[in-house]
Structures are given as C-alpha cells and as structure tokens.
Amino acid sequence: MIKKAARCAFPYTIPIFAGFWFLGMTYGIYMKVSGFSFIYPMLMSLTIFGGSLEFVAVELLLSAYAPLHTLIIALVIQARHLFYGISMLDKYKETGWKKFYLIFGMCDESFSINYSAQIPPDIDRGWFMFFVTLFNHLYWVFGATTGGILGSLISFNTEGLDFVMTAMFVVIFLEQWLKEKKHYTSLIGISVSAIFLILFGADSFMIPTMLCILCLLTVLRGPIGKAGEPE
Amino acid sequence: MTLTQQIITISLCVIGTVTTRFLPFIIFSSRKPTPKYIQYLGKALPPAIFGMLVVYCLKNVDILSGSHGLPELIAILLVAGLHLWKRQMLLSIAGGTVCYMLLVQFVF
Image 1 (tube, helix red, strand yellow):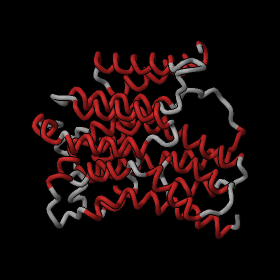
Image 2: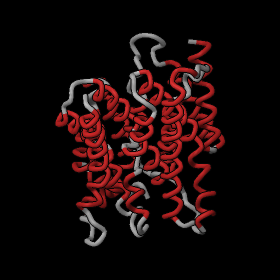
Image 3: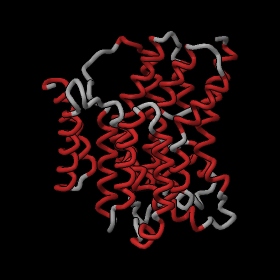
C-alpha cells in the first residue's frame, strides 16, 4: 500500500524535481559565494523549506543581527501559507501522524499538488500526500546541498529552467478553471494580484493582495457560494 | 554576526514559516466543527490562490524594458495551448519550459 502510493505520487513531482534541483542549486551556490559552508544551505533547506525566504535569509545573515526584523520578514514572506492551511483543513484530516509532516512541509508546490491531484480511489490519500511532500522536500535539500558543495564550479547553460515552476502553476490554474462552472474566484485571484503587483511592486504586493482577496470573497460570499465552485 | 546570532536568525525564519503553516490547523482543530465561513473560504480560496501563484512567479518580469515579458507570454500561451489540446500535465510543462529556455537563450 505504501509502495503503491509512492509510485503513484512520483510522476506528479517530476516538474518539481526539475525546478527544485535547479532553484535549490542556485540557492546553494549563492550561499557558497556569500561565504557560507554547505552545511548552511543543507540545514536551512531542511528546516525552513521555503524558497523565497531562504534567499532573503542569506541577506539577513550577512547584515547586522536584528531578530525582531527577521521574524517580521519571515512572517510577511510566508503569510500566504495561512491560505493553504485554510484550504487543506479537510484534506489533511485523518492522516494520523503524517499530518504533522504534511503541514511542516506544505510549500507552494506541495500544497498545489496535494490540493489539485485526482488521487485514484485505491491509493491511500495520506501516504500519497506524504510522498508528494517528502519527494519535493528531498529534491530541494539535494539541490541546495549540491549547490553549496560545488559552488560556482559548475556552469552550464540552464538559463530559463526556472520557468518550469511558472508552467506548473499555469497548468494547475487551467485545470482548476476547466473544472469550475463559474470563474469568480480564479478571476479575483489573478486580477487582484496583477493590479497590486503594478501598484505596490514585487517586494510588497502579497499582503495587500491577500487582504483584498479575503475581502472580496467575504463580500461576494452569496454569488460565489451559490455558484457552488469548486465542486 | 556570531554563530549563536546566526543560529537564532535561522531559527526565527523556521519559527515564522512553521507559524504560518500550522496556525489554521491549530485554530480550527479537527476535534471541533469548522465554522461555516472558514469552510466556505477553504473551498473558495484555492482557485484564487492558483491565480495569485501564477502572478507571484512572474513578479520579477519587467514589461517596460528588456524583452518586455514577451518570452514569458509566448511560453505561457504555449503551455495553455498544449494543455487544452492534449491535457497531459507533464507534456504542457515540459513543452513550455523548453520553449522558454530556447527563447531566452537564443532569441531574446
């Protein structure tokens, strides 16, 4: 049963393998050239397991010690996980001891796959989601550690490979779009983020975007609830 | 920064991340019934999140200078086209990524 779930979960994580191996390596190299031993990217990718914050953490480690500032930055960058948690309250139910790890390892990619995957009925859901999370976690640690060990020794032309993550989210967005009858919340998500990105810029648009999405979903609860989306 | 200060800095990043991941599960424990409003959000949020994540991935694209976001636009259209045609997740992702890599390495 466990083996079967692992075999079923693996194909879903192939795009993440490509993306995390590359991004993790970039992160490891960045740490190495910033003067840190490979132990740092290895332990940080294992314990934080959140790409954008780990890149920012390098800058934090290089500047003056500021614990409160660090905590606030971490909370702001990671705030979007609150939305993932609310969406996974039901799906992570009854997964036993695995629930702790599923929540700990809930990065953007693991959340997106675990939420959207059509898990066959003969596969154990808990184990499926566990392996999706575990594989993604391993790819990331593997990439970061390798990058940290090899540093800038390796240089082959991988420019543009990071687009694999964008492509995956486009596909998941599209799948969701094809599944729903009305597209209110898909449209809210994409337009609000685009507008706030233009207004506030790349570094500070996420929190206003999340608050605005929350307000719109609350105000429009009637029509959205009635449309019964998604199933 | 001393080693202790480094350890504290990294730990605070872990604490910040773990807090945002665990908080909803702690507030709405599976022992009590989840409020109707939160259940509604759990269903209504994901499509909005996926839209938000697409924009999040593209946040550093500058449409005013450089290649004006053209490689991204072309590759996304290809991903969408491939996906509507074949509906094979891996094919759509691989096709779009290879196309994007060729575009940024050889065309733009």
